Image (cartoon, rainbow, N blue to C red):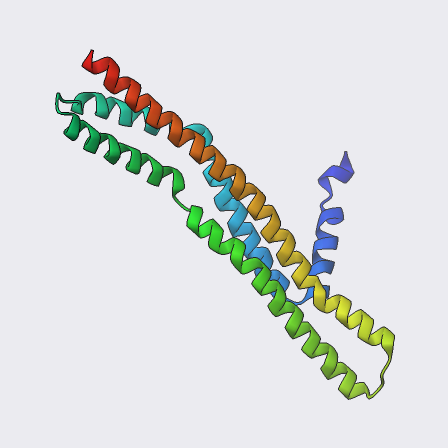
Length: 183
């Protein structure tokens, strides 16, 4: 039980990763934290808040249904767009954060390789072990950036599929409401 409360087993590897990968990994970590915070916010919104918004839009829609099909179509399109915008809020920002992660990883690799070549020029030795350890250290930011991007892409795919399903359900609900009101 005391081991569960002791965070050293989590923090020590993370600190070692930061030390080995350089400053770029800290930036990537901050982006990962921001990205997953927004992803969790969207998950919370889609699970808890979207149904409340959908119900309020349907209530407003019921009040606006007229005998004119053209007017009803415009109102329906308006509410569909409004609901879709509510669902897609922050999705483009998540996409940008996902795109930035591998690019920053490559930046970390390039700066790490520059450090390796500088160290090799100063030591004036062609030691293969020094080169191998430096390349290993330099590629670490790319791995971190790619892992962040892949995990973000998986979450984004799930979010977009859920948004599509909720949007279709809302569209069908508006049609059913319109048909039942006109009868």
